[in-house]
Length: 244
Ligand code: SAM
Image (tube, rainbow, N blue to C red; front, top):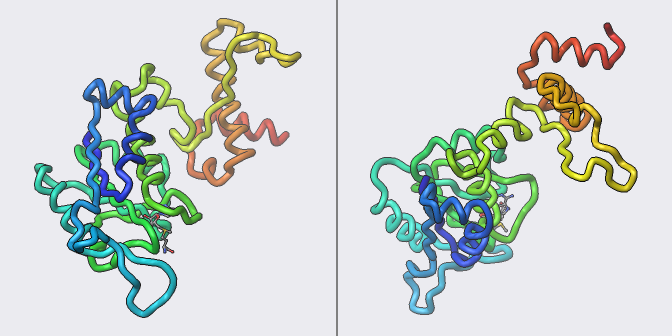
């Protein structure tokens, strides 16, 4: 997977990316990051890339030409097609399903806006997906790009030490993950659920599945509606409701 990020703040992307698991994966050659500073493509003698909005109003707008040139510089280095994700509070809200879909791509181009956003005309020309990370407005698209790259990276083969961990994470199969415990067995009077110390693998799995079901129903009933439940799952939930 090759990430290409068009941004006015490449350091912010590099610093965020190089830390922890994504940085280690890049060192191992499992993924790569290329940042492109949109300012390097300014067509203005003062190196500006923003201007006042037509029609008036607050703030500045990133101009079309530098963004387009920055994009073209990346595009010329990629063979085949590549999705261009514009980070935008107006986009489709990012979720685990989208992360799984994006993880199948070879190259992803991220476009990070700033100020009041980017001239609509260049967005119409180059963007394939507008993606939001939630219903709130940030100052720029760098944090959203890092969030998406992180979620996608951990799904790539070899990035996580234990391949199983992504498989059982929250949102896989539309269920939240069961609670996790580590040593010591007792912490400030609170004990680890005894079943986890039993060494009985099947019983542990059953308990974890049930905890996932209960947790999802309590915290995210909307997810549970979309989850594929087995007969046993349904029976368990009905039993909790005293229905059988
Ligand atoms: N005026 C824009 C609007 O109301 O839609 C908001 C612009 S915002 C201040 C500046 C940039 O931050 C956007 O161009 C986008 O790249 C990024 N951004 C802000 N909030 C975001 C979100 N929730 N998800 C993804 N990107 C976001």
